[in-house]
Image (cartoon, rainbow, N blue to C red; front, side, top):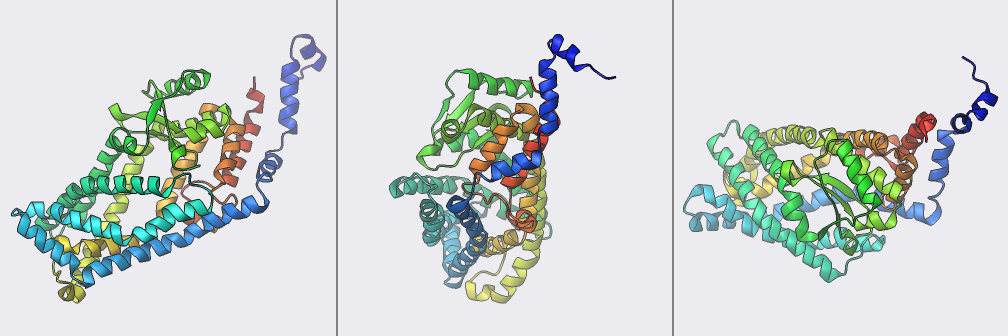
Length: 416
């Protein structure tokens, strides 16, 4: 049917004509390039250098872990810690928990120079950190204390199945670690995150109401939005919908609130809600369980062979001895390095799904494109396809902007 333009104008159809003309004129690729052109020169070079340096950090981090494990084994420290745990803890099931204390403390001390460089010096070098060294050290000490609480029960569970099922401990060990991972996802928002940051209800106002309206429209059982003070530590912007059941919480950091527009905030929150609605917590749990199964199977195959060859000199002959832990950690670090593309693809796929969901939920394509450009402060905006496949656990900024503009082009005729 042909519609007469004069008839539309005469009956209040001006908006329909303008919308149709805008849809015909809008070029998503040109709009994408316009966004990308806002990052250039020194800022782009700095962003690229920071992210590309992270490629090497993966390798050097694995090598540091292997080196520290070798020191603990070669000089007999691990065997001594295990012997001490056996003397102090008369019951064998308790020994891995006792062993965890010297292991966590000494490993933390040996890796401290590397941690200071990666988490403090490098972040300041690229202008991403707001922390003094004293404040950073305070957070590092808190993290150490959290590890001293959480790691002992995990080791108790893992070494219990190693002792009781020599042939199938790879299966049960993976399930034990997966179960603790799920428990951590439940308790972290309420019991761990507040150790490092203060969480306060978002001030009443239109933006808060819009975020909650989005949540309720997606059947997310949250009655409040929390803001946490990440600005005392970093300049990065972030948000999340975390927890399960009674611990579910919608949170955004104050950097997101202070450095972005309401449209950008809504775009980010729509993305985060997508993770919840699309069941990424459970799908991620199944994916990480599969990864753990592969990891533990390779540990089960390789660790006894390495102990048979080198264990006598280390004073460690059985995988069931907690003294084998540095070896298991070293092997795991190498395997995780090799599996980097797989792990990143699992996460990146879910992030892309959440991007698409967030665009539909928030309907703020320009907001999402704009915030994607802000994330380029520490993510290379335009990687090669190989780079993105191997090193990116989120879609690249260029891809996110392009998909936002494509969504906009497809929905221009729906504009108010």
